[in-house]
Image 1 (cartoon, rainbow, N blue to C red):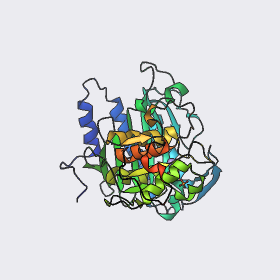
Image 2 (image 1 turned 90 degrees about the vertical axis):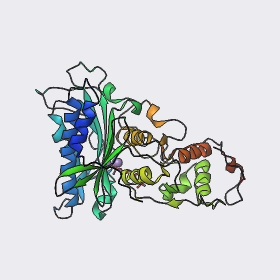
Image 3 (image 1 turned 90 degrees about the horizontal axis):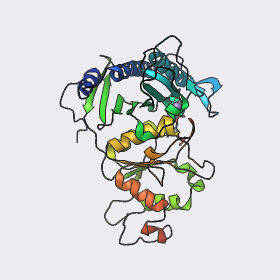
Image 4 (image 1 turned 120 degrees about the horizontal axis):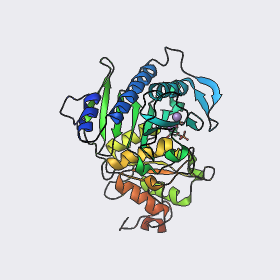
Length: 357
Ligand code: AHG
Ligand code: MN
Ligand code: MN
């Protein structure tokens, strides 16, 4: 089955312009912001594709705010996005996973009403071995749109449901841009010879249920028993052939979520005994991915509540993640909340005939 669904030849520029026309009061500020962002993505895509040639692989020798080693491409991508966005006049604040606190905009330039939050390079551990990596972004409108001063921390600490747009770029066998302004999810594929993103999938819909799960199973011994039971359940053959699920795990959230958006199933980065909030960062990674998954008809939960409803308390906050096909995520929640009938059976025993979620 061909995955490409777009029938029209539409570049990202044209798509942004068409979207702007849908909003009669649009000033064009948001469209210009997106165009600047696309330029940053093209620059990063170019560097990613030449990574080995430019002596850019490897570590910078410094660590970020989480104590993680910063790779050269992390630092490059961070720098490029900041440079492309800081002087455009569309933003009043920025925050990046690779920068500590709010990123200050240069003095003497106008401040706009938008806020950009991003993970410049997702999947850092895969950079040096030519495995898919990504960039994640999220856009909010400042609390007081008429203000012309710098944005504040309060402007950034917002539930994900208030995002006006979110997306990611997936640098894989091709470069793909997936984004949503709250009106469904559109997918663009980059043609490096033309330097253009072309619309390849219009209004992507996630399958109701999948047959693949994605989790770092190396952490299994640290998981809650309820989660261990859920994963056991996914691996237990069922009479209808729906199970066992197949395991797919790249270790780049963008790549794993990209696959889940197309094929369905579930992506998880749960809490465990050592990491009570999991690993992924709510503002930089989880909220934008959750927004896209919901916009594609999926479900995104921390196991107990909708991710997009969480009110963040700090920029670097982490959050457990269960996202993907609505039926799969609801089933995972039922296990975690001890509402799934299979749980009355111990691992490896036969399953009940009725499985309700
Ligand atoms: P980043 O490279 O931005 O630090 O993010 C890495 C994240 C995420 O992309 C991925 O899902 C996860 O780390 C993988 O973690 P494990 O190696 O613990 O599985
Ligand atoms: Mn990341
Ligand atoms: Mn990162």
